[in-house]
Amino acid sequence: MASSVVVARTNADHLEYLAESDARVAWTEISDLAQHFVTVRDATRAAMRLPSRFRAFALPVVHA
Image (cartoon, rainbow, N blue to C red; front, side):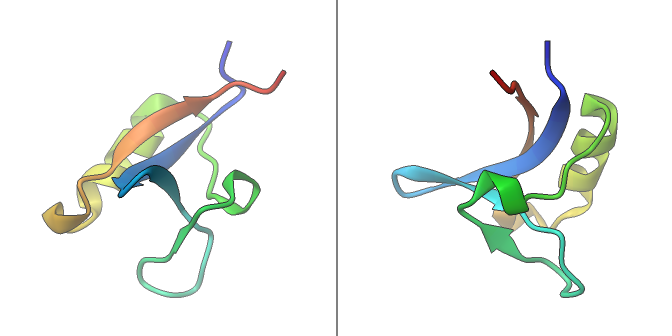
């Protein structure tokens, strides 16, 4: 079961995550620095509010 949800996008051969930042839009390759959401709905809403050139999506995170 997912413990949180992040917003992600593909970039070349890796994923980038929407970072918690004061900046308008910031991306990070480090999942621990990603902005975490409680539900897929919240993450999807955040992804849909980004400009379409980012092509971001909600991604559930499962911690082992």
